[in-house]
Length: 248
Image 1 (cartoon, one colour):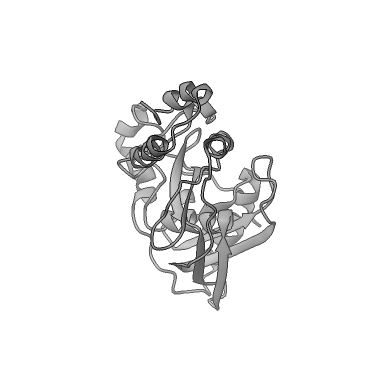
Image 2 (image 1 turned 135 degrees about the horizontal axis):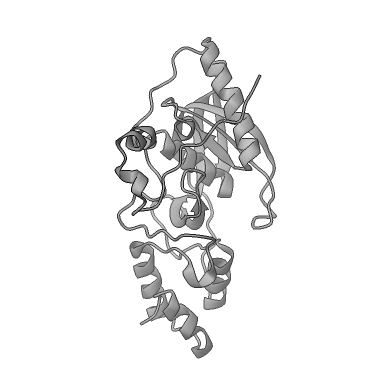
């Protein structure tokens, strides 16, 4: 019988639990690379998968990785569906990913054309910065079940291929883009001990992200400052952009 599992959650800096040796042992699983799955006949593995699926549904998440429930194995489950914030997200059935490998792909990315677009996208948490790398990337707001009440803007590949095994060990492959690609990359990061808060240039906030308190890494802020230097915003937008530290 499947059960809803307790989540391993990392409290914000300054929380006294972070100095507790027993609590440090509990959360250590979030920070270390997971072991590869080799025995697909193991009953414990199948129970873990069923419990991950039930817990993801109960927590209303787009994904959940094994280390988030205290198990250091390269397993995660993922799904997507429309929400109030992302009404156009396609519905994807819950899928089990074991031993995943992510490969970035080329794909189209829509650049920001004017200041109004920038403001609108930051307001909605769907920010996309001009430019990119060899493979197209996007910057969007992400939250995490392991970091309650916090969020960050994270750059991810826009389109990826994921090679993985299903719960029976069969080789599978999916090609996802947009938010679906972001979910794959977010959950795969968990399997290598990475969180959205790990980058030294990422700033985290407490509580519900608001437009005036949007999380912008120092690297991304510099990119936007350069953008607004080259494309000066209209006077009525300057105050809000100053609040975000995007114009001087």
